[in-house]
Length: 177
Image 1 (cartoon, rainbow, N blue to C red):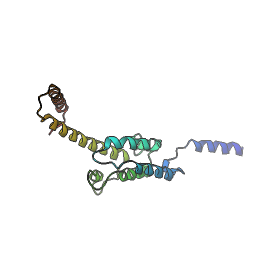
Image 2: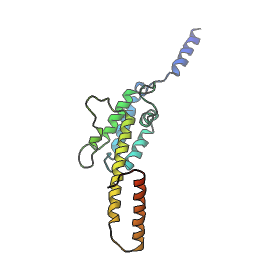
Image 3: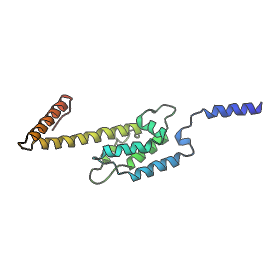
Image 4: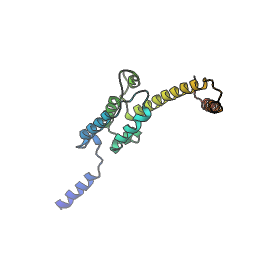
């Protein structure tokens, strides 16, 4: 009878969810993630498309971290881990360039009494702001190309294509310089 009861309790406890921060390898996984991101270049205003796949690739080895990053697990859910979320936000901020040219320090600023960043919201804000900046840079470059005066048919065709893309962007609601 005692053996049956012990097996029943082990089976019941085996199915219970254990938050990542309560697992024995939590600090090891955090350290591995932080060390792997040290090898990657720092996130700047100009390298989102190069940095993002590396960041997601490093986190993809840890399913719980990916769920927090993608917003699959939301605050209030029993699988949401505040400790994991806070540590991953810190790791994300440490992988960004915070001083010098092209730094993104201003993107991490929050009002004084606001809640701490949630990883998913921070990631989405970085993605939105940094891809917007890159689009603005591309538009400025396209504008300069449009002002080049040449008489070759290929260049005229290129300028016509660029103007067509500008018109499409304006029709989609993007404000252009």
